[in-house]
Image (cartoon, rainbow, N blue to C red; front, side):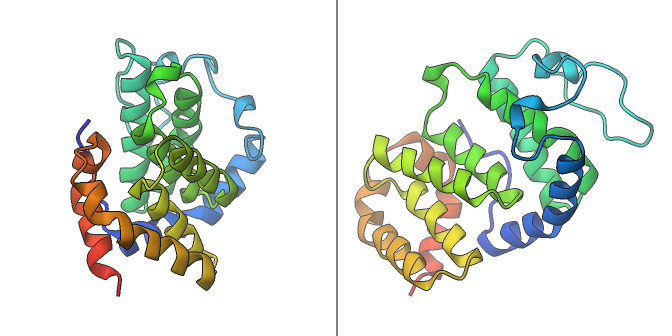
Length: 204
């Protein structure tokens, strides 16, 4: 699966964090913060159906995902939220983030691969849900020890939390395994090649 949106490290983090306060506040008021399965929206059990109704005045037009597979739905919604965060479009993030999470929860076990887990971790990071982000990183590394995506996520969280020891450990693991992992031909590395190489270039 090809990477759909640019992923420059620091600008992506800053863009996501700028939206965090508003996203967390609105999701909390809607009763979704901390209880993602209780999202109040039309057709809550079906993210595809939730995007087919008329959009509120002034809202961005949702993607038509009615005929997509569960994986395609999650990909489309995840991309929509990520792009909105990069553009500072908080209202779109607030509208589509719960749908993207629901779409992830509806993925078939075989579709919840490392790339899907990475994208869900990125969504969790966007609203400062660091435990969920790290849980995805841990699951990635349990499935594929030395996987660069897991070390990358750990480093980003450690950087935001100003945990120097954790960041040093994650960065060292990333550097130590970079060459061998990139040579492994894993699909998630091909999909995020530019991001991973940029990150490696930023490390001392």
